[in-house]
Image 1 (tube, rainbow, N blue to C red):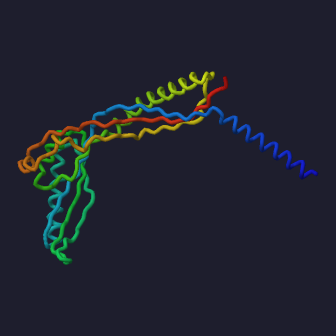
Image 2: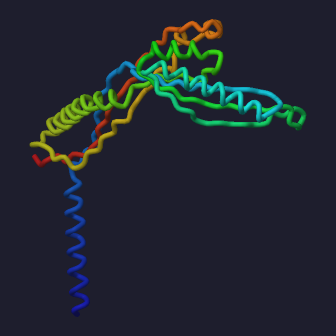
Image 3: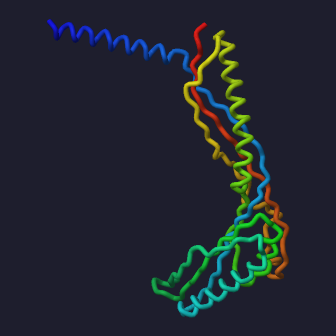
Length: 231
C-alpha cells in the first residue's frame, strides 16, 4: 500500500514538474540582431620567398641563407615593418622518376601599417625574393575598437526587436532568458586591387608601386531568447 501511495505521489510530482517546465517555456522567442560597418584596412601582411634551384643542395642552402640574411638586414632600414622567417624547405625535383635537381626555399612574413614603406622595401629587395602573397586586413587594435561600438548598436537593435514583438503580441513586457555575442565576422575584400599589384617590369626596375588597402566589412551579432510576459 505504501509503495502504491509513493508511486502515485511520484506521478503527481512528475506531472507538476512537466507542467511547470511547459509553463516556463511558454512565450519563448529566439531573436538575433547585428550591426555592421565598413572599416578601412590598416595592416598589410606580405609573404616573400627566397628560392634557388640547382644540382648541389648544399650550395643552394648557402645561397638561400645569404639572400635571406640580406633581406633581413635590409628590413632594418624600415622601422615600421616587422619581419620573421617562416617555413624552410629543401626538396628534390624529378625527371623521369629520377632526381634531376634540387630546390631550396625560405619564406619570410612581413607585417606593417605603413604601406609606403612596404612598397619601397619590396622594390629594394626585388632581386633577392619573390612575392608570394599580399593580404590587407584590419588590425586587432582597430577591430576591437570598432567591435565595442558595433556591440552597443547590436544590443540596441536586439532590444528594439524584442520590444516590437512584445508590442505586437500585446504583452506587458519580456524577460531576457539567454544572450550570446559573436563578434568575429569579417567579410574581406580581394587580397589586392588589380591596380595595386606590382608588375614584373616594376619589380625588375626596383620601382615602388602604390598599394591600396581597401576595406573589410566588420559585424557583431547578438543572439538570444526572450520570454514574453503574460497579458
